[in-house]
Image 1 (cartoon, one colour):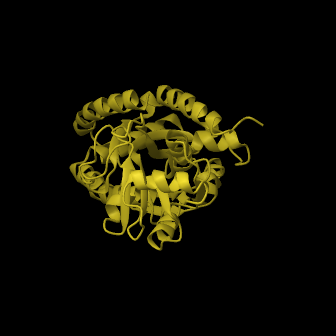
Image 2: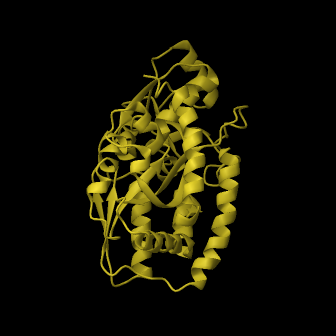
Image 3: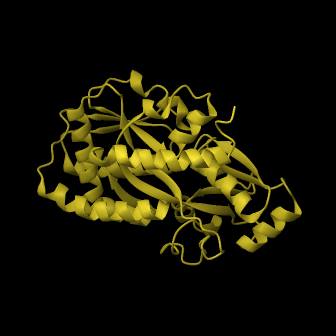
Length: 320
């Protein structure tokens, strides 16, 4: 299902680039407040900084003010999104599958439908890494050590009931092993733990491994083919596991934001995605650009919510 979704998104993105280029971009009247649900240093922060740079080029008269309200794996900000001014100038970084899995757990203070997405801009594939100093050299080593020491390997990730958490559960199930998940506030905190060898490894994303080459060792990636910047890292598919998945990132707004403002923001971030500089930055960082605008949002969210609800049930969420 994820492969079909990504193929459709790639096709949509190629058409959207020409559409955006053919239109006159409407810049915001004032500076944007871009709220982040995770601490500095992770993929969400990196993508926001890329967008900040490109938006300054497209709309020189305004600033993009990146602000942080991190906690509870993103749930702290998402539970408060609808208290922000609904003026079209406050946007919130959002993530899937987090926003489906967390409400299923039941203690996060928001429901999936409380968050109002207006644009999804990229996808990052799941990736298993260990510290460079680790004696584990390959995915075969990892499986062997995990099977010999059930529950002893500590695997970090960003947040509870997040994409990393779901990927960890999938890792255990796929290889018939038992490892222990250690949640962190975000990839930045988790990264420090991996680099310092405070944990045995991490279930993370391609940008983390690319940014930390020589410091971490990537073991396997959830892509259809090997990543061009990680050519020595096998895919789970090569290992006989049908696993092509990761995390989507986008922007949302307070629910009271007008349809007109939602459309302007959707078009604005589509223009950022279509910019050659953004494409170059994304490729170097390991982000896979997608294009889901307000026009296709309902269909996309229905499909993703169905898929991730099934994932959550396999994780034991929503059973109480």
